[in-house]
Image (cartoon, rainbow, N blue to C red; front, side, top):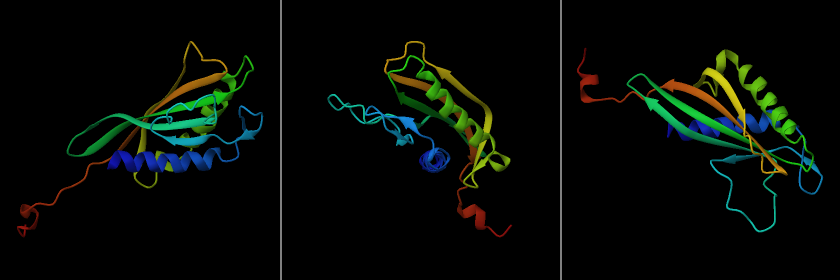
Length: 155
């Protein structure tokens, strides 16, 4: 549940941060990237209408009695027949990085703390005319505290 709430909060945050960021589509128009949960939908024959996009996905995590740590991957996708299409992905990454690093006290939705480094990586073999970039973020929140009958023993 925590992981799902983090992904939803991050999706809303990114939608706001990227709402006026125009990127090219296959038909040459500009629009903000779609924010997609988890994975791209199954391929549709002959269309690239998912582009541009940012996929938000909780990929791994750890937990103990005190904290829950979640690694969230963001996948930026751009479409352009230009040979420097990776620059569109870099521009989106920069907008995302600036927005996340400007969170007050690194806190998202008054609950999730951005911890560690913000890291990104271009893939070496880009599937031209589609371009991708991967961002890794790490988040921490308090672990749920479970009440037991011992909690109410009067001490």
